[in-house]
Length: 366
Image (cartoon, rainbow, N blue to C red; front, side):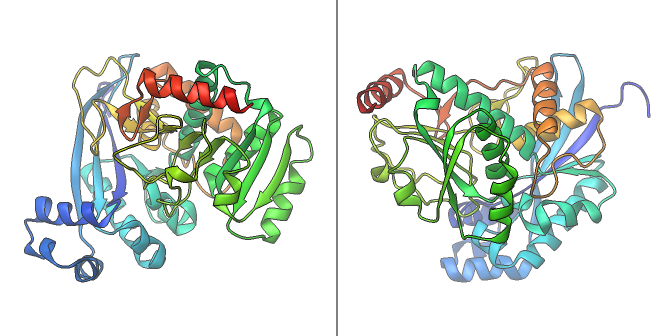
């Protein structure tokens, strides 16, 4: 290839809700089935297996002057359909990846639950000639950076608090547990069930200096700690009324784990964790997936970074992430100018009022 070749990536996503499914079918396919009742609509899309390229990043410019280009390909299924029909949904992810390859993508990123099915990217990587990543390493890196910066802004010492991690034993939850345990934090893990894997994992943490307790109940867990990192596959599991005053929730999940409401509480902070921004060298204002100008999920940021680096390899694949790679992709992304500290809540800037009310509540509780 010529030295000035612009390398391409593909990013595979899905509809995050029935509402998005309906909008996608109507807008991208002009299909009257978009008007069907919910159950019939979902069954129709399941039968058809629609995939469509829905967004193009025609010129992402790194602070180093490197350029990449990419397309997002959407599978017209909802999260619950992905989880209920995992073999089929994996086949669709592979099909979408091959569509991206046909377009010229050399790196394939898997977004949201596309990164969960198929043994967390392994089956997709086995069936593609392009490199494949889930993007979860940069998601972990971004979430830890944002956690630390938010704690500084609130003047909170997190070592004095219990930190609740929801979404264990997903790959993001596992990596966050390892990192925070090594830093000496007191953790409350919310695990779907007690398994041999859980026992083995906890035994492997003996070299750390933190403390860990395990529960299977989300509601009781968030009564034990005001600092919460949540990354489930199901979404919509935390009602804001469940949170203690002064709670800070780093919501990493897609779809989101915290239920949106118009009259959001001011004494709790809901952070769109894992959300980053394109390098400021990218002057064009992209509005991806309803986000703010040039805001992107960090899993997409990892896909872009690897493309800019021409790292055609399996990077974040499988359940257990390499913590050295978490640090490496963070360093590389920062080097290209991706922004990690432009904080959002439900895709909007966090207000000073929200910060101050939460700060007052969490310090009052200590």
